[in-house]
Length: 253
Length: 93
Image (cartoon, rainbow over all chains, first blue to last red; front, side, top):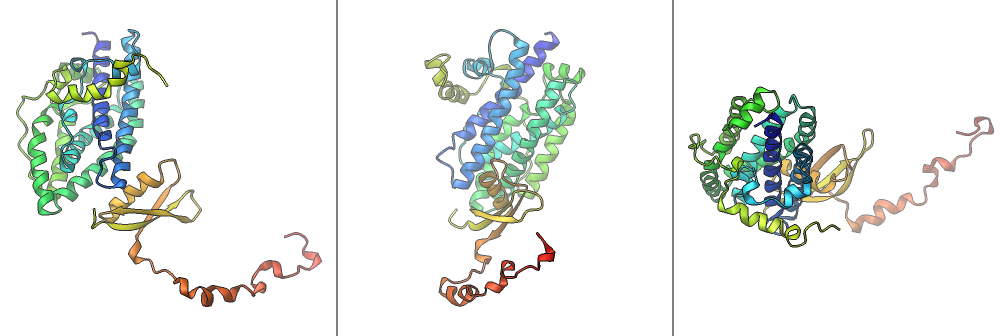
């Protein structure tokens, strides 16, 4: 692969993960446990959709095949999606939603923080803008993990179950493939080891204050999201999200 | 949710201005109240600082006391600066 293909591939990963996570959050619209939480969930979700747009626009320029950001988001099939397996998992209860959000935010925060020093100025600029939003996302989701993990017997039980359910998908966050290794060597993407260490330290820190046991690193099994092989849940999410553009291609309003 | 506390929210819109009451939020603790207030009341660039106070901690005057508390000030015009005539030498202030 030439370096430009690596970069557009990497941009799609960042964009797809942000978009899918944003879409999952927006599924809470009208169903959140409190009005205040609903507003907060939508704020975070729409932040992520906005960030995805920035990454898609840059990817579209590099791909230069006539597709724009909307086309990349709404007209690609499941197998062309490059998001992390973690973010496509269903929302479940609030413990699952917040655990998923936190595990992603911790990864997202350290990824963006490293990308602000990227050798690619455009990547560094988009990352710097997104980092301000994600700093807040991480603070909010970490507090929820503490609140629920160290809350009542019921909330603790649900958090333990959520961690057990989601942990297997975290190996993908801290396992760099060849694309990421090559991009790191050219100074564009973060150092995979430093990113993995920073992510683990943050998660261990928050779990400790939330009375949650830090599991052993997950086995190297669920690693295929970045390559386009997804769990059964992504197809359903895309079917809903892409419905309009599939039914009425190029519709605008 | 039913056990959440009601907090009153105050936003300062600019440096140098006062915090102003803008509304209320429900939250499990003060930190969450700050975040909920941020998401509800500063979405459109309204603020640079937030205060939250548990509503139960506010002591309010009673509507029954309105007359003794506020009526006596109605006929005390000399408490307004405009009551006093300025000497001509002062000019415009």
